Image (cartoon, rainbow, N blue to C red; front, side, top):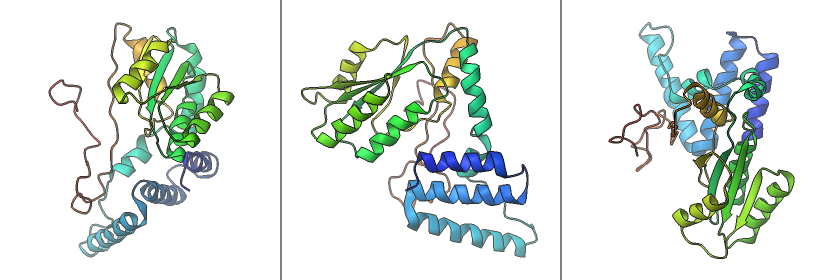
Length: 250
């Protein structure tokens, strides 16, 4: 229901119809935060957070603060993610890089939810940097997964299916994809991962600024700071990590 196309539509609405720093923009951000929370955590957690935020706002008004001092990780995402205009500009700038390496994205696939796999592939197709190949090393036993992969491959030449005769495990399946890869750099991506549309652009931008680099390290998002970890046992609430370190990387 709340797929990547929905969020692309919201970006377009913000870009063309909503004045910057207006009341409408604040309403837009609140609506988008709610949709993102629904997508990631479902109705129960989202409803709980709405109640908590409303309670905090009423408390702060009673105490004379005027407005609640609430800054969630979702707020940070909304304020720092590229706009539709930024993404359009990146697609143009990508052609101006002096160094435009082919990036091989290696994805071992084993019986994921077909819709989740579709969103994973779609996230790659939406990249603003166009010089990539996606190798899907498929060891799935479900025919629908193979059909999803073949459908995308038939419509996008940069997507390369590799249907394996058996499941060797995630490491060896990835190695099988590596054997047929053509890229100068490798990106490892699970069959249920999502990457932001500017991911490869930022990687190649860094490679152009620091051509001696052999490895680019960047963060990942596991969950949201707005969720109480006591409500969801075992939930990883560490979306922000320190600078790269062999001692702290996980």
